[in-house]
Length: 239
Image 1: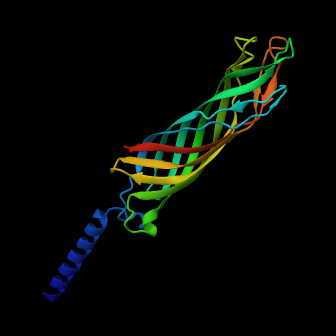
Image 2: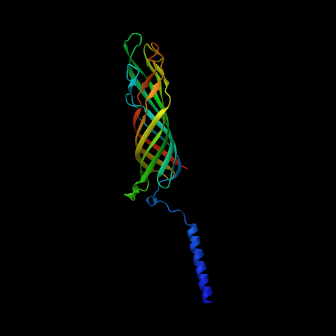
Image 3: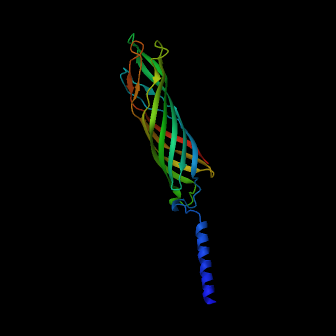
């Protein structure tokens, strides 16, 4: 009787341990315990009041100065439970530009203006560092840092002047290599909605343009790569 009771007790204990182990949920990373930060698939939109700096051109007898413009970005990504965040992104930059263009017929300088657009496709990777590691009450906040690479096209939309209208330069470049770095802060508003703000540097290789030969244009030329400093804000929606 004693042996039977012992065996039954042992069997019951083993079944209970197995059942408890099988029903346990995965243990989250220690840094994220108690965090209110969302994980999983997300879509995001961000924007900034920014534009490229002055650009020098090889093959043109003048430089181009950019006024501040704006940028819009759309992203799709996934935040893992380990705070790593791969992401795909489309960017659009628009900036007014100005130049002092020598008339190819009269050689008299003229003021010219137009718009420059940049379109890029990027693959990014980020790490989100939970602020609650040092401030336990900051359960909604993470600090992010990341970088990305991709490809970018530039379009000069009608660099025009009074006597050379409708345009001295009007065309698109081939796609070139682009890169960026980002750093900032994320703040969870709800379990699905997140606000973020931060700094971004975006750069590219030089652009090549084909322009008609003089006197209609200036012939083929290269424009130095874009360098854009941005303070951006945006929102992420998790699914």
